Image 1 (tube, rainbow, N blue to C red):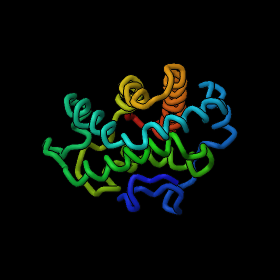
Image 2: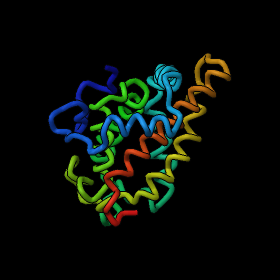
Image 3: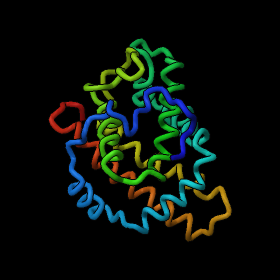
Image 4: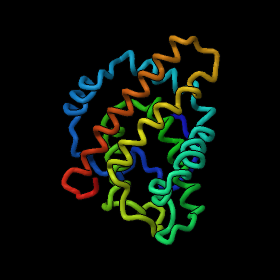
Length: 199
């Protein structure tokens, strides 16, 4: 499996540290049908992965350093409670963010993937935020901001998808597959927020 680097702090995909998702594979199948995520989507998402895998650092830098850092209500979630930078946390979480791009494109959407979606979501809620990197930051990232930022990621990923010699049609299909995966993942990420007052 493609990895950004051999050891990524806090990256526990497929390990016993990751609990079983409460979402069933049958529910995942239904959610795929809801968003229109098909075998063709999988094909174009893998094609997108080949295009993006050499660009993950630039993509995450665009999202975090150029966009999130310029929006105070988003930037605060990766800073201390006093608003100071947390460079070690930023470095580790950025590597995990890069790896998430590759996992989105290349991993089979099976039980391990489903489990890790739940784990990622928990790390944005008060249940697990700050635990992986042992930092003192905001207690959770509001669901509204997580969902809202998907529009930004979907828009800004497109130039990266067009960075190689793919046809315009291929770029459009890769982008559609990416957007469907984002909707699928947000549907799954909403589950841990259910019952929490963290909208």
